[in-house]
Length: 180
Image 1 (cartoon, one colour):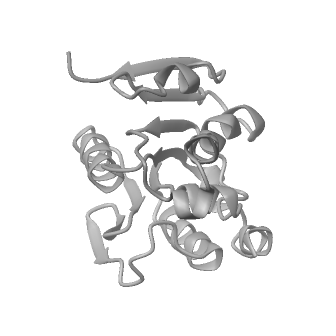
Image 2: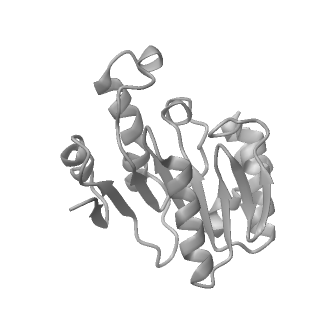
């Protein structure tokens, strides 16, 4: 479905810098903070999260309550953002969406990890499989198409026990954040 959706809507994410945020907790809050930072910096920003969708300052409630919505709705929303000339897309990304390839056709430029906790093991089976599913977002940095003059960035929570694993995945630049 994701392949057909990306083709149908003309790969709209290629017109923006894409920031994907994954982790167990804090994804929606992190996405909203990133949206606000770029907005305050004068950029037009689109955002898709469990709670809300934004195109610039225009906001709507995510009535589906799905974190990463189905590929056709996802691409349709991103197309709306591209048509509105958004420069940045902030996207909340789940491990389920990564495993199910729902982001096919969305070339992520920055991957952000909030944390990894013992959730969703019913789906993934164990912590290693869950971590590896989250890591797909970071691996895609190296396999997705590059946009002119847009580096591939990795941003990892230094307080997370899996930080070394995520920091070992190649990117143009690797950043850590945390509480000191």
